[in-house]
Length: 142
Ligand SMILES: Nc1ncnc2c1ncn2[C@@H]1O[C@H](COP(=O)(O)OP(=O)(O)OP(=O)(O)O)[C@@H](O)[C@H]1O
Ligand SMILES: [Mg+2]
Image (tube, rainbow, N blue to C red):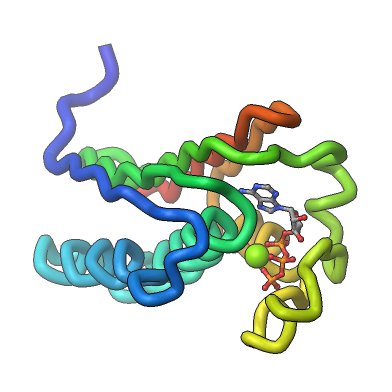
């Protein structure tokens, strides 16, 4: 059995919804502050969760982000239904992006999201099935 969760909450993310884009990450940041998580840890999770959330908004139909805080670690699991990533190793490279001109005009598409998630996580896993969707798990140890 894993250690008992202290806190667990799930957020829905809608693909293409730029009005609500980023709100789940902001809410998560507030929760982590409220429960007294060390600010440098909050900063790392805020970056990782925002990048993961935006990727769902930009590249998937819909998804969810689950925050789970235990005495041992903080884990964010992002599951989406969408086109998936054909070559995950390539997508993980800095500067690689399939963002359209329209997306780039909105300020996204530097190809830095996934590398930044990895950099900010203690443990990062990504699994993607083309035509189905993508699952990320971001863990920071406490
Ligand atoms: N959830 C996802 N579903 C489908 N494709 C994705 C998903 N997340 C990332 N990708 C693919 O991986 C590429 C790289 O993602 P990454 O977040 O690193 O960069 P980006 O989103 O293109 O730009 P940035 O994050 O810097 O704004 C994306 O351009 C996209 O092709
Ligand atoms: Mg991105």
